[in-house]
Length: 179
Image (cartoon, rainbow, N blue to C red):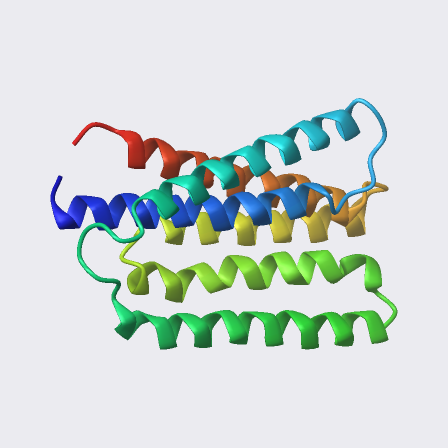
């Protein structure tokens, strides 16, 4: 197996690990009645299993292939720190304004936006459509929360969880596809 293929498979495993964990977290955001609550629990379990499979894959390939691109570490860290700062400060402002039920919407929007600078950095152009989808979930949650009795947290938790889990599973399928 070539070094590039090993590196791509390891990156796919890391993607499944990280996005599986975050999908599991998003599925835990909404308070829902049955039967949706049961589906969210199933989604969380599938997301956790996906994260474990991604972690195992990336750990198995850790020392194999070409060395990690350390030049991407600093920009990656800066993007993630900026994401957390923007989400944290934004959440504080939204909560201080008395709109705390919309904090998950803001966080979802920030998560979606952070995929755009990550796409070229991680050499994964499919992160851009994922970012668009996550931003659309945030917009749908805002509109739904303002215009109906449906909780915005339910929309973002379910929507972001589904898209992140779908992408994590896709990364695993990509990793295990024959070369």
